[in-house]
Amino acid sequence: MDPARWDWRRSGYDDRVHAFPAGERASLIEAVCTHTVPYAKAARTHSGQRCVSCLLIVGDALAVDNSVDGPR
Image (cartoon, rainbow, N blue to C red; front, side, top):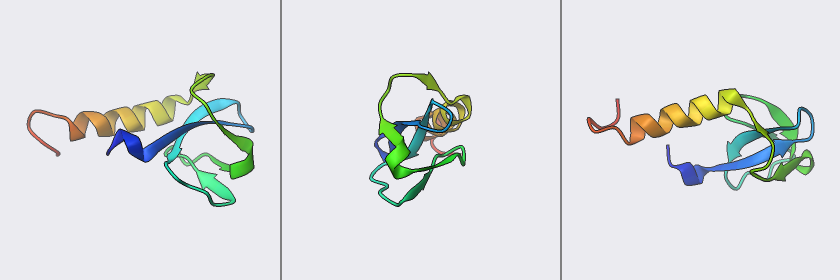
């Protein structure tokens, strides 16, 4: 999973910063943790409390992609 594939956006619903697919412009966007929010209510920012599920999912994928043994 390429880190450039994700935009970190703060949801206007739960005020947490989630990982959304980069370049997503649909009216309703879905984060890697399955949290959904209207595009207009998702501010692109790194400020705020992070979604722990998004951090774990993206972090795990990065670890697998960058492991010494190669992808699992």
